[in-house]
Image: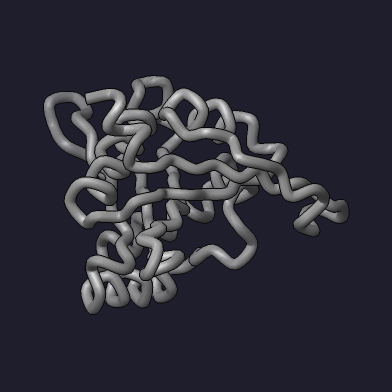
Length: 167
């Protein structure tokens, strides 16, 4: 959908979001259209979703979250691209979206594990995924060249049993 792609591109290029996205992340509408089409072709293996939230008695596009299959045989999904519009932050939207999305991946699409990685300097994401029930599994020390210096990648994982304990 072109409107979704334009919205996603505006999010990915926002000055408060862009520094925290992986260098190879989609940034323009055409790249997001390709990503959306890939999800349409294989919805159990890839998906980019727009997060909507109520805003002044109306619904608005407020963010995005995505996944791709990391390992079919072991049923591992890689979560990426969580973005929330700055004016929608502080409402618990990211936590609610992450919770619903991981439950969808595990209980509807039958993934056993959801994993992700964020930059070590992304303190907001590290706090978020910790609060969302992900387990910090490790650090890739000085793994990525960003802004003229090496930065860490922080690894998180969540498995089906983690969610079953909550039920």
